[in-house]
Length: 83
Image 1 (cartoon, one colour):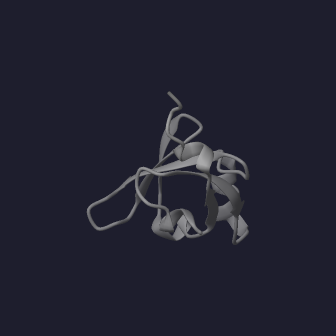
Image 2 (cartoon, rainbow, N blue to C red):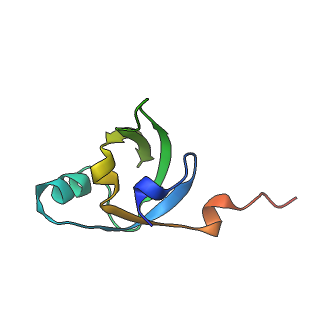
């Protein structure tokens, strides 16, 4: 699944940044690299850009950029606390 397909408020782990070229390189320079947790926060009124949280900071990415970021949700991120 891509970051664009992730539900708002959900956290996932980055699997890969596809596409190559300057956009992919820029995303990786901003800390979006495989293994990094990322949370999809919200979108602008018309759906573009998308606000995400990565490495304890907030970042806005275009929808087209979010479609290049492959992610996987993990049960670790969504587990309920044990009583």
